[in-house]
Length: 194
Image (tube, rainbow, N blue to C red):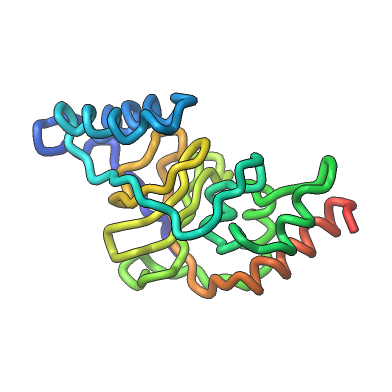
C-alpha cells in the first residue's frame, strides 16, 4: 500500500507553509506544563490556522510514563490491566516503536488505502527511515484522535501534527485490544521477558 506523504509544499489559509505549522505545533507539545497547551494552540491559531482541538479523555490516564504513549492509546491498551502489569515491570518493554514494528509485522492488522479508512481504524506516522513515530485512531477520512507528547489527547487533521512525527502516514484495519495484547505478549517474550 502506498503511504500518504504529508506534503511540505501545502499552504494554509494565510499562506503559511504546512512545514511551519507543524514546527510550531511541535514547539507547543515540547512544553512541560500540559495545562498551557490549550492556550498556546489557541494563540497559534491566530497566526497559523489549524484544526487541532484538545479532547477530554474518557479513560483513566496512566500518569507514569512510558505506560501511556500514543501507541497505547491507538491500540486501546490504556486501561488494560494486563498491559499495565507487563509494561510496569522493571526494564520491561513498553508499547513504543519496537512494539509497533512487531505488531505490524505480525500480520494481525491489514494495511488499507487512506480512502478506505473508517472510524476506529489506525493511522501510523513514520519517519523517512521507516521507523514508526506516532499513531492515532481514525475519526473520519480527514480527522484523527491521538495522544501527543506528555499527556494530552487531540483531534486534528491528518497533516496537523508535530513535525517530529515524520512525513509518511499509513492506515490499518483490524485493531482490537485483544490482538494488540497478543502481539504485546509475543513482543515481551521476544525481548526476553516472560
